[in-house]
Image (cartoon, rainbow, N blue to C red; front, top):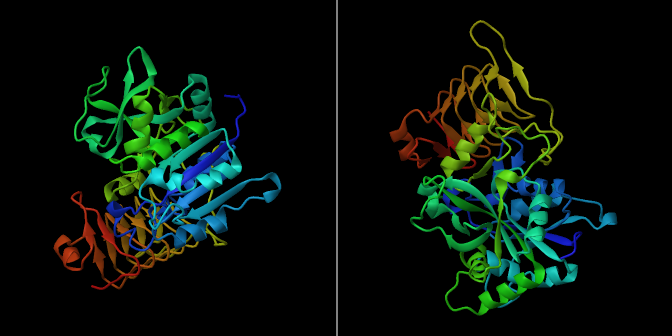
Length: 414
C-alpha cells in the first residue's frame, strides 16, 4: 500500500432510528437536530473534512428528504479541486429491493466507488457524537498491513448487546481474532473485566479486499448484509482484520476530558445524556474547540435576546446553551439546550430540557426534563414533564428515566 493513497469516504446514513422515536417519525436519524444548531450528520462529516478527506458520499434511504436538503444546503464545496459531499439515495441497482443492510448499501454503490478508483475506502456511521482525525486511523491501517480495520473503544460489558464486540490476540493486540455483533453477553478485558472493546462503527478497508468481501456476502445464505454483523467477522476469521484504538487519536484543541469522547445517541436516554454532557461546567464534549470545528449552517439569524429585568420577572438562562434567533422574554432557562428561533415567555420555566427549533413556551408554562421537537407550542400555564400520568394520556413518550418527549408540531394545552 502506498503512503499517499487515494481515499473515498462513505457515510452510512440510511438507518431508520426506531429507538429514537418520535424524533425520527418525520426525519432520518442522521438529520435529527443536536446541540442547538447542528444535525447528527454534521459530526462525522466535520471529522472527515477536518481530516482532509473531502470526497464523500452519503448513503441515504429512510425519510431522507430533510437530510438530503441539509447536505445540499450546507455541505457544498468548490468542484475546482474535486471535493464533494454527495447524498446517494437507494436506487435498487441489484434488484427490486432497497438496502438490505449497511454492507448491501455499499455493494449497491460499487459503481460509484469504481468510478473514483480509491486505494482505500473509509466507512463511517452518521449518528455518533465525537471528534476523530481519520488520517491517524488510515495510517495505522497502512502500517499494520491489515485489509480491514475497525475503530475500537472501551465500553461496559453490560452494554454488549448494543455494540459489535472485538476480541484481539494478546500477543498481537492490533489483530482481531473474533468479532461478534451485539452478543447478549461477552467476557471482559483482561485488565478490566467490567469493560469490553466495542466497535465504533468506523472502518478502513483496502478497496479490492472490500469488494471481494461484499461480493461473497451477496451470495451467502446466512447473512444480514451488515458491516458489523457480517463483513467485520469475515475479515476477522481470515486473520485480515485489525483494530485501531480510538484513545490514541489526537485531535487538535482537545482537552484531557473530551479527547476520547464518543457517544452513540441511538436511544432517547443516550441522546438526552449527550446533550447534558454539552452543558456541564467543564463540558464532557467541548463544542467550542476552534481548532477542530463542527461545521453547520443555521441560517442568517440574529443573536439570542434576553429581555425583562423587572422585580417580578427576569429573562435569563443559566448553565445552558442558547442558540441564535431565540428570545427569552421574562422566562427562566436552566441547565438546558435551546435551538434557534425559540420563544420563552414571561414567568415560564424550562429546566433540564432540550428544545428544538421554533418551540414556543407561553406565559407560566413549565417544562422539566423533556425533549420538545420542532414547533411544539405550550399554551399558557401548560406543563410537560411535571405530571407523568397526564403526559402518558396525551400520548407523549416517557422513558424509564423520566425523560418526556413531545412530537413535532404538538400544541400542549393546560
